[in-house]
Length: 534
Image (cartoon, rainbow, N blue to C red; front, side):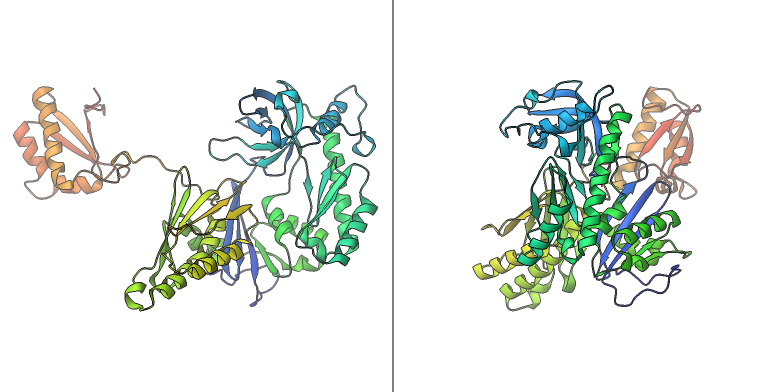
């Protein structure tokens, strides 16, 4: 397993030998690639296309394009090449109040403010979307899930603004606390801060990070989100739909906001503008950690210097090695992701089959939890562990997988092993996969994975030459082939080409093309027209 290395060419001092968590940011003209290393091993990898303009959390003023009564949903134009999708349940219970606010911001109308509004009656969760949205209606929406593959973005009208310590929820009056905050004294402190800062009709979700923050930091975070909300509402008057009202911070800052803690000891970036932006952001949220941001000035590409490039390439791999010969096979299908756990040659050398299977399964569980985050696998994941016979061992494996998945910020559910030894995990993905397996069906094998045997290739070519000369009357044929086939046809003094020229009274020209499949052959005339296509 590759590990993140010690940086070369940092602008602000040498790396700490005891670092536990690193963020490596590689900026280039077309995209920003972000690698998160935990205990010096690549744990997460994401890419953000420059100037794509769409990210989870962005708020838009959209226009309803089409109502789908059968789906109880609608398509909304927010400026994306594909219309975004919103379901009735994503409107949020306070949608009438939000819509009232949006309508009040239209030109010629007196704008309302949330803190002075009289809230409308909440909508019924069993209602119909057509009762609240019509074609052409202007709505305020937020990106809940980015466009993935052929699907447009997924939207929500239940608007929220996330900060490091709190998540502001307009049109609410409730204060929710993270379940990880268990101290009664801490709960009272945070609720007291919220009640002293929040205006009427604003609620808040207090995040786990607030436990380590001072009163002033939590208050500053709440005021910052309130200010962002006011600017978002003001933007409605200035921008006709479809338009972006508020942009989330870049992906690097989002990871920092959600992950920065005592273990996060180094952030390395190779672009000066991004370096300044990240440093300024950390200065705002946690000034004491400003020095962990370092500008990389090395001559070696930043990902190569940290040995991340090798680990990124492994994301394409179907096989993932574990220790002592065991390995995983990871395959993606349209319906689900399938992971097979194999013990390799271990079972042949071990006497205790049950313990061997348990050891391999536990090692596999740890790597699988990492791979799910690293590859950002979403939907249904089926894991075929090595068969266990003891119920106690099955429970231990399940408990271990739940524990390992607890650090995954994506919403997920882990189900116990079935009687067939299969474990099912469902995992939500809100962003496009970092490295998409973009491929077309192989033109040589048509997706079968098999090609014609090369030993019969010469007979196939000769049959075509015979047809083109004797049936079509061609006296010149240009064979466009791969370098491998070209060498085969020209080999020797009395080569196949010479023999065919003498036998069929034809002039044969052989042209090499590196892009050709290994056994592909094209037949052209003097003007490079394809003879077979005629």
